[in-house]
Image: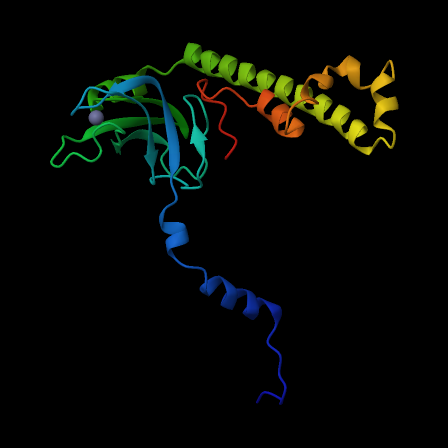
Length: 212
Ligand SMILES: [Zn+2]
């Protein structure tokens, strides 16, 4: 028998809170797989460069060839996914475009327009393939390190300027702001926004996605 004034433990409150999160929040989740080579749209011929999949973790992750897939329950195989074409998506009765994703020991090993080509790829992953993936991963890691160091240096310089009580004096300091090159942002209406824009990763190399 519960005593009067009984207060449920915190985890009951937690469960109650989760139960009120709309299920639709989870329904729209997926992962994105970027193709090494575009797959041609069956309807309009437009090159398609990626597809979305709900066959894996659906955590809004973005994968390039050679990446290990999180929450991958498929060790080896090919997975069929429908592609979305921005050009003809609204056409009624359009022909569907299919991408076959290749999974090799939990690694995304490529995407192909036919199941046969995907299966051929699956059977030809070898030591040279692993070295190619390793080289790509290392290159991307180094590129991100360079981007981070450059962004950190600029933000650190901007912070020193922001907290300087006498900004005119700070700008004349020989080892200060001017040597960092940040003075070029000062004439901008939104200097910090311009600084961030200068460090925006390229969108066309597949590694500029900061969402996941
Ligand atoms: Zn199309």
